[in-house]
Length: 92
Image (cartoon, rainbow, N blue to C red):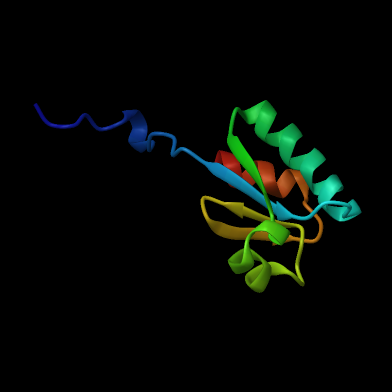
C-alpha cells in the first residue's frame, strides 16, 4: 500500500531541533537561553546548549556573534533572540 496523502495538502509536521551556541558569563547568552527554553518548552521542541569554549570549530565560526541560535543546523539568529520570530520558525 502506498503512502497516504495528508488531508487538504498539508505536510506532516517536520521535527525541529534548536541549538543555542554561547559561553558562560555572557548576559546575552543568558537572555537567549531564557527565550529558547520558554519557546521550545511551550512547543515541545528539543534544544541543546553548546559552549564555544569547548568546541574549536564553533568558536572559529561564531565567536563574534554569540549567542547564536541554530534551527535544524541552520543559523536562525544571533545576539538577540526574537521570541515571535523563533516561534514562527518552529511552527511553520
